[in-house]
Length: 329
Image (cartoon, rainbow, N blue to C red; front, side, top):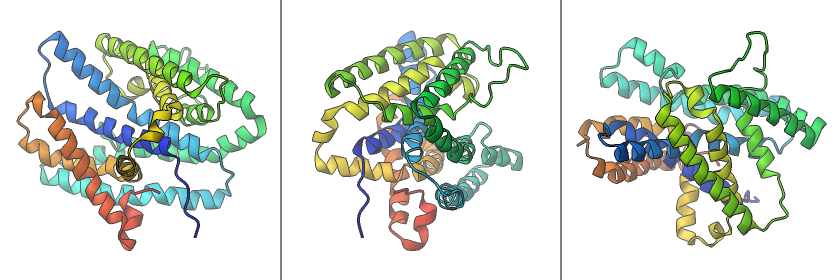
């Protein structure tokens, strides 16, 4: 049987994204910041963490929008890969929160993603339903169609950034708005070819990432990011995630990483979907013993990443548990 060849920069980005998500959630338990320097530091860490979700969605687009699908097979195969792990981990998450005193209303809110990490699952479901239609659109309209969609999507991002979307109640851009733009952006950037060398493209991408990070920290410092939409669908975040995506794609240094480190990154990547859910349980346990010292952030990060990865990795090796582990290959 032929083994599917892995593209390492996808694995690098997935591993980066899940670690970013985890550190963002860890930082919630530390603070509060008492000085400007501490506040800027915490905002920077949070904003690095917020890159995780857009990058996950961009990778999904880069992978899924390159293939033609039989609709029935797509719905059966692709949905099974995300629904079964969600059900399994959701049961464990709800049981854990119940043990810590969560009432039925709170548990329901966790399930539907209201102020909970599970919002990502429901967003992913909506995007997956749309993927076959987007693929057909790309086949029919090609590069021009992609640019057409992304230009209008970016207009909605600009309006959203300045709290002006929708601009008028009957000016309906909903088909172009929201998280669905990130998979299309990921596909578009993944298929771009540049006349510049990889080194120059990676340096430009790194500069875009750094500048966007500074802009996003300033943006979050002066803005109350109280909703998921504002958090992820704004101009600095689009450039931040795009810069990181392009840096990883074109940075030749990734190819020279030690093979054992590569294996570790790949393993985290494969387990990343399950880790997205399992880290909620791990954080619930270990933060009960949190000394609330910022010096413990690295310890909590390493411990949470390891304890979130371990059960997913072990389950992915067991035939009957593999489908629910969240270890996606």
